[in-house]
Length: 126
Image 1 (cartoon, rainbow, N blue to C red):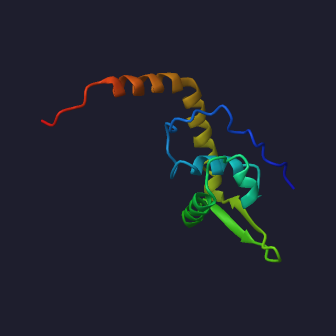
Image 2 (image 1 turned 90 degrees about the vertical axis):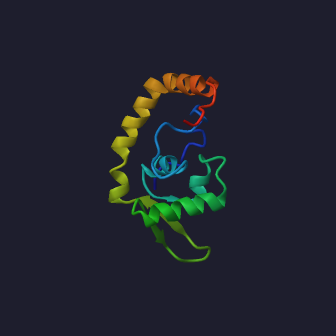
């Protein structure tokens, strides 16, 4: 059995939209949660504060549809379901690490650029 997820694993992360997208707002965080092995739905909810059960379900289904995660139903009462990164999903770990390193190095510049852009007068159609 793997170690429990740290409920504060995303504390300190910028709340601004991430500078890269892998299938949506929550997908990269779910991939990170599944990096160390299979997790139950309730385990994923702990560090993903702010995600509703509906959105988590929809995102996991989408990731399963895209072949990024596998869902294993162990049956029993109560039902026990685990989610795990597939082989395809694991191929995203290295690019995500590179994106995170880039964001850590350049996020201040990116946020400055956004602020500067927002301060500009709206464009008029030509």
